[in-house]
Length: 111
Ligand SMILES: [Zn+2]
Image (cartoon, rainbow, N blue to C red; front, side, top):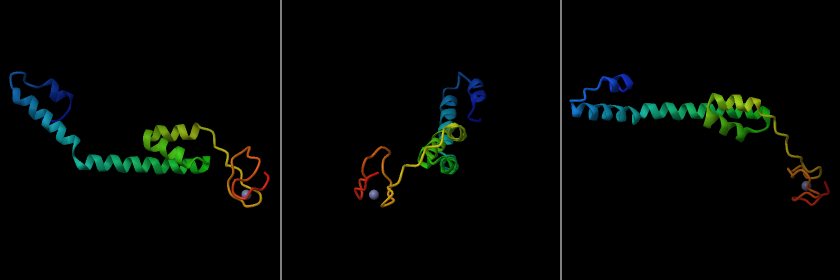
């Protein structure tokens, strides 16, 4: 007996233990470590591919999260989203400042 809808459709209603055996078999399939290892590896690979897409969009974290959460659909969304502009750097100390700041928060230089 396999764990699918045809097994459920062909279940003998007079055999009370048959339903329990099918449930046990399906539960065992869900707790199989190879299934979870495969799912984790797939999620990590999707996040890495999303991060690589995000590298060219200047949004590595955003696109890695999209890839991990949505898989290939997240990659498509990442490709369709606009690239993020890099934050401006202070002309004096070269550290990153927020756009619109009047003075650098690190060295105090006027922007
Ligand atoms: Zn500065």
